[in-house]
Length: 257
Image (tube, rainbow, N blue to C red; front, side, top):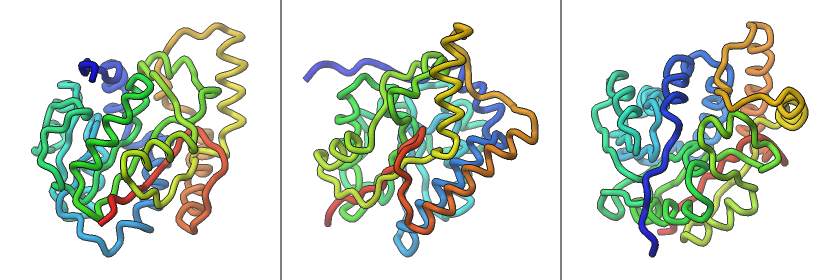
């Protein structure tokens, strides 16, 4: 097996996210969508021990902590990410590569991995999924979110050092091959797909935009409209509807008993 080398997000983007994550339309909307997915599958389950594999700023874990009385462990390869998370009050912090988790087998009831696998070279996600399977208790859940569709690669993708994107078929296949039973896999951020295609495939190429962060504050009316689109999708996903295309993919899978 080839050796593992460190790989993470551009540190400059971590700082951008930390400054904007609470109020930015995309993060607020994706939290609504994540909540809609979790409500449907987590309700009634014991969630005493939770791992966020690739925790970034730690804000998502803080948000989940307010919803659940769980022990949430935050793991990330970036020391800057853990420093930011510690500043938000997180105390269970582990610096590690999520392809080699330093935890006992069958330790967690839930593992979340949000927008992390895209920073690994293609094929390396299989190591992560195998580690998630090992670290979960039988009946435990894995929640994965990734950027979708190579056609949507952008200057932002380059800035954050994104190395791959996924299709629904590929993500489901890799998860199943790791031993999981896939419960659901849906695209998200679908309604804004025409805007994304126009920006990434036409505008950025036309003006030759250099790599740059996509985490920017928009005029309030536009940000409100974009958030509304994601809020509508959250309602659809909560009702059980899977979206056929989108800029993100969300998957929830179970480790069989």
